[in-house]
Length: 82
Image (cartoon, rainbow, N blue to C red; front, side, top):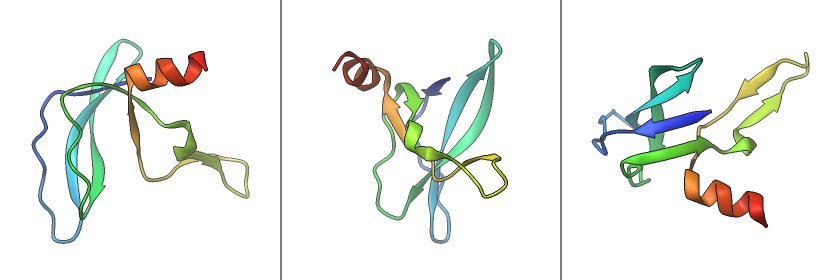
């Protein structure tokens, strides 16, 4: 799954801030918000992959996704090569 950040603008919130991203599924881009918490810097413009540690299964064996962490595509390539 490819995720694109096209704008480093932060969406302010009362406690947690967000940033818009696009996830590519079946050749189409779908917007979603990535949580930044209170202090995380916004993701720079670029292409990312969702960190696999964000996924887990619950007690009913259903897939769940927790807090989204993005990895730059280049970092994913380096990690796969090692």
